[in-house]
Length: 201
Image 1 (cartoon, rainbow, N blue to C red):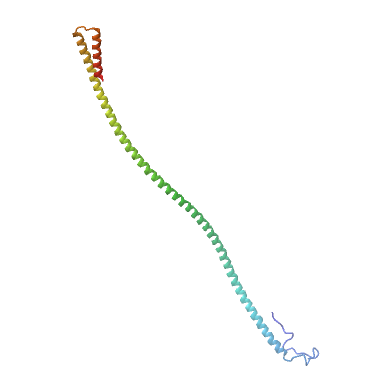
Image 2: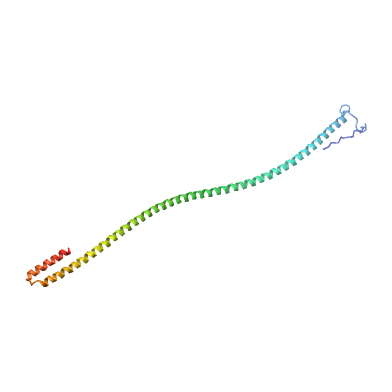
């Protein structure tokens, strides 16, 4: 904003225009106004320069603000990705924890199954040994039974032969001996029967 003086420097006031007031009019007012005008013009110029500088600074600040805004938006986006990554890591951690717990359970179950298998192997070995002993005992018993059967068969054969021989001898003695009374004959028969019974006993 520039101020223009009310009149030019070379303008001359005439008596017809305005008579100077010896009390109110200062003869050096033109020089004072000129100096004030120059000072004011310098102030306005400095103000314009300062405003231009402020405008440039404001433009730089606007650029900085735009950059900061862009950086803030990118930071928010990265923060969102970070939160998503943290959530994914938590889910992965929970999954791995569950897998670890399942692994421990499987390990305990494997240990239990291994011990059960070892116990069953021991029981199977005991049963096998018992079956082997039982088989040997059964074989020995069968051998003894067969031996007893063979001995009894031989003894039975011998007894049968002895009985046949006794009957033959009895028949021969009966044919060669004279007739005896019935009482003696019955007594003799009773004696033979007793001898026969003694032979079978």
